[in-house]
Image (spheres, rainbow, N blue to C red):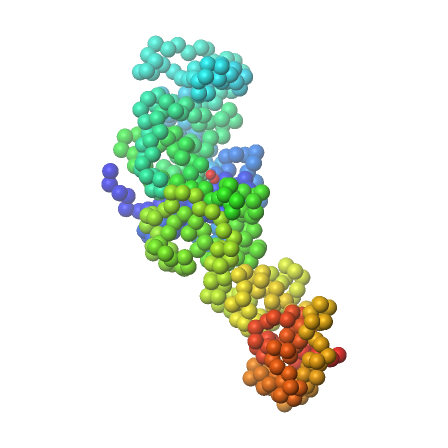
Length: 475
Ligand code: GLU
């Protein structure tokens, strides 16, 4: 088999909830692999679980993918718009004797499984409606019962084994006797996942499939279907099954163990490049590199160095990675993100230039734009210093210094910039005989409502003169 020249990957989320972090990670791997090879990345919405799929979820998924910046070259393709194609393939398989209608009722199947359990056997479909073939030459089928809508089952090979060389796990072999004749079309005419996924991956020319390892047991069916539908010479994709992500308690990451949706992290103030950097490392490595750009990842991501064992979600590391990317981000961009955060709190931050200056000053102390907004908020709302902070820092001993500072700041001749404010502080210290560690926290508490901030002159410069004077008014 020759390698295909054009790499085509896909992500195929089911719109039954938010875009899960695990899916975001496989989307990233699929996207990066396609970009690395100059190929294409397809987005497919697997909406055949009609009862659980919602339009709201579709929109959440699209929004999450867009926010992450994992742009697709084709799609979104919706499986429910491809029913005619699936039906045509089902008919083709039936005509070839590779699929058949099964009229067994749920009650009959329950009884079958009950009996199998009683005999200590595996509960596999006993192929009662499978037509005669080489392994059962003389078999006679009963008459289809009237009024029973059949499902269609795939005539899975009865012996032999399915083997593939997994991009993540290495060679995997599963014997056909372990699996039964899969339902490919339900009574309502909707295909099942394992069938639709193969028709789609084949029609869409997918060359590499990255997905969660919960799909390993589906892969033998899919490979058998690839051969049945594609016939001799069909080129199968390479499969890469990534281990689950574990929560920090070692159990599978789940809603009960904290946020699992991409949008929750967006709302919590993480940057898409921080999320992607962190997600990338949860199952893949490039030497000792922990912090990298998406461009670097694309240049490195060649499908090697994918981890075989599960990674553990580590909120502290995510925060550390995000803090790095926050420092790299432009102040203007951060200002826009902080403005959104503040708006969600009902705080209007109109002055873009001021927000950019504030972002520049505070971003080194923050892991998220929510933390950055916590800092910037004081520039746009009235500040009420906490009583305990006032009592601790705005003491009688410090008040002369505060008054000296206030007088200098009230003087229009004091330039309202960092050097001018530094000079005013210095003069107030000299006049009062206080030390910086006494005066600065008191000023901070009165103006900012907290005793620790970046350098006091830089912080004061962010406020208008009248607001600072008002804060120092009653000392
Ligand atoms: N819809 C499947 C899922 O969300 C896709 C699995 C696959 O990539 O084949 O798990």
